[in-house]
Amino acid sequence: MTRCEKAEIIGRVLAELYPRPPIPLQHQDPFTLLVAVMLSAQSTDVGVNKVTPALFKKGPTAKQMAALTASDILAIIKPLGLAPTKAKNVKAMSELLVARHGAKVPCSFEDLEALPGVGHKTASVVMAQAFGVPSFPVDTHIHRLAYRWGLCSGKNVEKTEEDLKKLFPRERWNALHLQIIYYGREHCPARGHNLDTCRICRDYGVRSRM
Image (tube, rainbow, N blue to C red; front, side, top):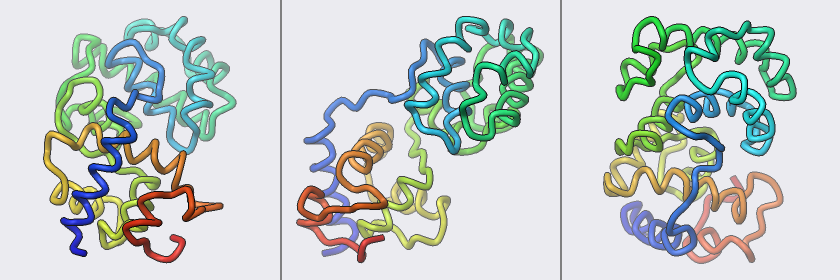
């Protein structure tokens, strides 16, 4: 089976299981989504969702977040990994939004990636989920699954994003990003992988227990 054939089958399975995948990070608008995604690095979505209600109550907009001190932000997000760095980046990012973008989140990869603490993956999530721009955010989890399923070379995250964009239709990218995440959590974990409950690996082949 070629990569293209496997991608078509996997795409159908994911669309069947998750026809309308919700965004797992709680947010109200592009700004709160951007902050939530920034906080999600090396943290679980569940953990992020526990701290963001209190954070967004104090800083629901870029102007209000920029008015907080890094210590104010840190006190709320302290349970998360890399909290001190994230607190500084969220404040600096908010200040830059106010100074350069009228306190609005820009709809541009270049402008987003110029913000403190915002890398390509974070920018891709915001472009996809806040603005509907076809993107294919690839984190280490999607990278792992794409390699396990034989859809990429496994070289690095950047190459995996390139490979997946070639295999799947552009109009499917945004949904697939979420569908793969949900499937990995529920059926294809890194540890304790059970072929009996993982339909994709069981029926369509898998690289040995990656």
